[in-house]
Image (tube, rainbow, N blue to C red; front, side, top):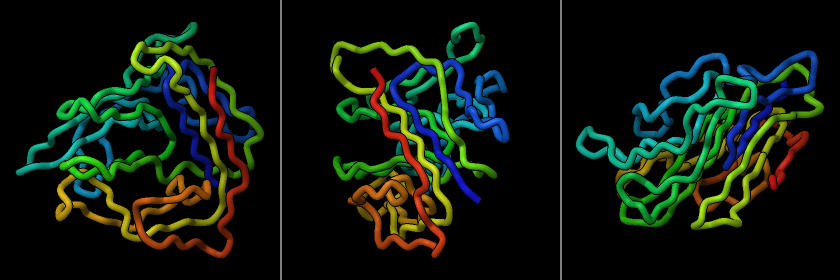
Amino acid sequence: MKKITLLISGLVLSTIVSTTSAQQLPNNDFEGGWVDCNPWTSNGTTTVGKTPTSWTISNVAGYKLFGKWMGETQVGEATSGYYSSSAVKIYNSPNSVKDTQIVPGYVTMGTTWSTANTSGGNADGGTFGGISFSYKPDAVSFLYTRSHGTTNPDEQATVVAYLWRGTYTQAEVPGNIGGSVSLKKVKMTDRDRNILGMSTAKGGDVSKTPDAARLAKINYALK
C-alpha cells in the first residue's frame, strides 16, 4: 500500500484538493472541525493550541521538568479562508521560553516531532508517517496567501509532498527536548529525511523493508 505525506509551511491555506478521483485528502477544506493539538514527543504529550482534524500543525510541547511542560510554542491557528469559514494560518514563532530559538511553522498529514538540548543547540525535527493511498495520486492543488515579516523578508515558503511504499525505520532517534541525559531515543518509522534521502545528524542506523522505495516527491518553493 502506498503512503503519502504532505507538508506545507509559511502560508495561510484555504483549500487543498487531490485531483485523484478515487481518493481525496481528508478534511481538505479544513471545515471538518478543529481538535486539540497534542504534539508528539518521546516523553509524552501536552495540548498546545488547536489543529484541523486529520492534519497536524507543528506546535511544540517544549520540555518536561518536574511534571510541568516548559517552552510550549504555537505556530498555527484557524483563520478565515477564501470563500471559506476556515483556513490554516501558519507562521514561525520564537520559543516561549527562549526567544532566540525560532520554531518553524508548518502543517502536515504526518506526525510532527522536535528535539533539542535545553542547554542550547542540537536541534532537529520534522515529520514521520503519513496516510495510506490505494492509488497513486497524480496532483495536489491548493489556495494560499503569503505575507512576509520584516525580520526575514526573503524567507521561503515551501510545499513538500512525497509518496512511498514499504517501511523505513531509524534507530536511536532522540524524540524530545531535554538535558543530555534526559533525551529519550526511539525507533522512528517512516521519517521524512530517510524517505527523501537526506542526511540525518540525529539518530542511528536506517533500515527498510525489501519493498521500500520513494515513488514521487515535490519540494517546491512558493513565491
